[in-house]
Amino acid sequence: MESRLPEVQAGLYPKHHLWGIDALEKHDDFEIDWIKVDNSGFHPLVERMLNRSIFRGSLGVNIERSIIRASHNSDLIYSVCGPPGVAKYLNNKVISWVFRPFEKSARSFINSYSHGNLSANKAFFCLTPNAEKYYSQYAKSKFTPWCVDLDLFDGKLNTRNQDAPFFLATGKTGRDYATLVKAAPLVKAEIRIIGPKTQKPDKLPPNVNWINTTSDPPDQAIDYPTLRDWYSQSIGVCIPLSGDAEDTCGYTNMLEAMAMRKPVLMTKSGCLHISPGTDSFGIEIMPGDAQGWAHAMIHLLKDSDRALGMGNRGRVIVERDFTIESFNKDVLEFIQTNLNKI
Image 1 (tube, rainbow, N blue to C red):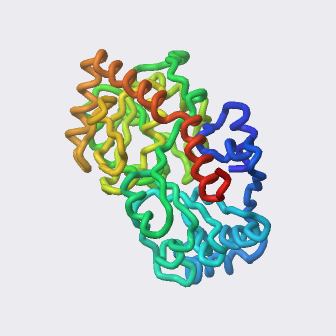
Image 2 (spheres, rainbow, N blue to C red):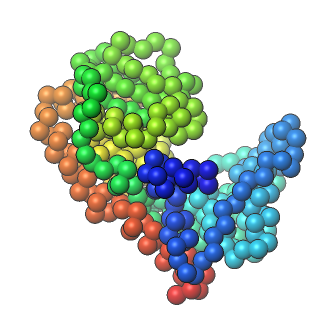
């Protein structure tokens, strides 16, 4: 993330991807260093072999090695990409983010989710209540809801250069675009998908516009200001998921859509503490249900007033419960508590 800081400061990249580090940097109690990943330690072939063997169940040899080096001169390692596999060697100084009750990982010498390594973490931030319940057996755990950059995703309609009405789908992880594409011929509107080429179905109906991105965030295909405009111009935002009941995939996409006052059409997952159907900001569809997707989109096309109401409801929820300020406060207080600063 350190390479994106100038874009964050210019309002061109979402601030929520800082995971509260900006709040820590501004606080007098802390001196912050970003851990720079050293990619020069091993020949690429050796690195690949190590990641497939000794470090197979971890963040990777170069990241783990960089964490060990940084730990020598720090009181805390704050890991936003999951528990480091070397936590058991770091003298109880790691606070990690965890997203689901258990991450399956291959058996290896350096294993992030082994019982011994999890027990060596000082504490866990948990993205879901289920994760908090699970990880509290290893260390102090806190359910901390995610947040969204309400300045970038400002909820304002931008109809500049808008063509015909369309539904928008974007994201790369855990997506089920095949089911959404299967539903497309039944819908009289464009479906605009920003997704990895590897997930693109072989045949696309005429009303599906696929924009290839990489395994990186969607701004590898379009920039975030354009993505914000596409959110604002869309009829609704589609988040088709694989159906994993503990998967948090789509969470950020959902919050961005809510911030932009757009109804959320999303595969039912069950692990998040809010949902489009229960909280009335969208429609939930059962996994693999192409007819359900078509019905949901057709419904919003026919009932624009309901679509508007759902979108406005979503904005109210994020302004109340998912602000960066609230998230940063939770992160700061939990870290201070675990470092005995308060």
